[in-house]
Amino acid sequence: MSTEQNNKDGVKPADDSHVKIFDTTLRDGEQAPGFSMSTDAKLIVARALQDLNVDIIEAGFAAATPGDAAAIRTIAQEIEGPTIGSLARLNKNDIEAAARAVEPAKKKRIHTFIGTSPIHRDAKLKMTKDEILKSISEIVAFAHSACDDVEFSPEDAIRTEREYLVEAIEAAIEAGASTINIPDTVGYTTPEEITELFRFLKQTVKGAGDVTFSTHCHDDLGMAVANSLAAVRGGARQIECAINGIGERAGNCSTEEAVMALATRRDFFNLSTQIDTTKIFAASTSLARVTHNPIPRNKAIVGKNAFAHEAGIHQHGVLADKRTYEIMDAEAVGMPSNSIVLGKHSGKHAVAARVNALGFAVSKQKIEDLFPAFKRLADTCREVTDADLVRIVTGNVETDGRIGPWRMRKTELHVNFEDETRPHARITMEHDSGERRTVTHEGEGPIDAAFAAVCAIADVPGHIHTLDLNHVASEGIVRAEAVVEVEGRHYAGKAQEVDIADAAVAAFVAAVNQAAAIRAGAGVTETKAAS
Image (spheres, rainbow, N blue to C red):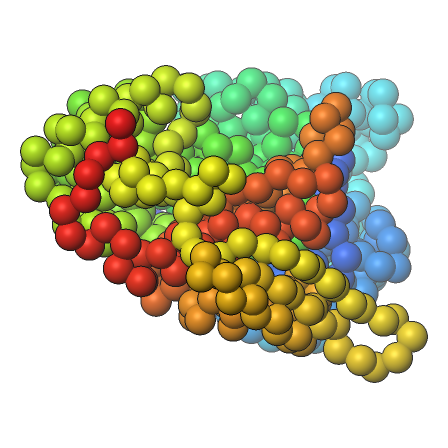
């Protein structure tokens, strides 16, 4: 196909300095065990991808189930900006299902594929090389008649004979494909190998200059991101990837890692994407929440530890100039800020910085005085929380371990599915002064209502920022950690209870109590260190 034909159809090869981001979170990502999503959940993630400004959203596999087709159509109707695509096997029924699903989209794509490696030809397809080539020519042309933008993937391309791979690609281009994806379906390749392969294909395939070459790498050997970036160095101008790296088996190339590698090392790659990197963390957390799969703490770019520091040497350096130990700004990926985590490796500079951030005005000598108490505590736990630090600074802790003036006395949660009454909660709390307050509040759910009631009683204008719940079956308890935002500040509270709702509310109260204590002026002047 000529460049003129591509332009007439409105589908152009990628600008050589621009790398398209083809996000397959909702297709390949969702195929992974434990990541299935409802239409509503898919739409939440699709909106996050829209905000992220990805080039293409592969919204699903229309022929897989009626539900998947409906989800793709819903996304095609409601999401603007990115191209909306559907996967389709190389047969007319799949192509027709994909075309119907993406039809409402302003920009639409059909992504079709067939296995080309010897193992796929012989074991799975039972087809000869010539039969596959004939099918590519006929079905890609059929797909192009239904949709201007057609992507073709020779599945298991990495293990396909090079001469035959060239034939398959040329047949797809001749039939109307405008994007050629070279998938490392089983995560088998290496960076050096895939770079050389893309260079070979760009130089050898007839019509290579008229199409966009794409890479799709899996992480079976832990090299999906490295291989995708290596493919880009070889001439690929589209990366197929997924938020948080989810996908079949060990997953796909991680969207956030590939994007930030190109952005951070622009000096090396001399390439760019159109991604709004400040929306990366929001997209990552949206996916984690709708799939109930938390982000691993050590996950690059978006993990809790990605911009966190506990070692005293590192903390001192970051407090002086964060460039000493950070090559990216946390804010650049949408995280609130870099994080100083207090633990047994922390030094006095980090403790002083956190004490000041909590609103306490203490001298350098006072930090010296309280530091031994901090170290003793740090030796007994994984992390010293803000509540722990308040205890140390004030030397004023209740016998129940509580920081702040309020304690829970009664929690009642109400939800009725048989009428239109909104969920509500009735909360009773007691102040250190002996005063009791009871508030009934409505909410989107009973726990949301309980949070609102707690804030009303404590007179703290807070709202939940994050809530992590972990059921420990062996102990028969639920551990909860709540981060509450109050006037731009974050307070963390932890609790463990037998009941999940009780744990959530107790953790929220613990965080609000800290806010109440600090807002009341606890420790604003010099305080005596805990002994």
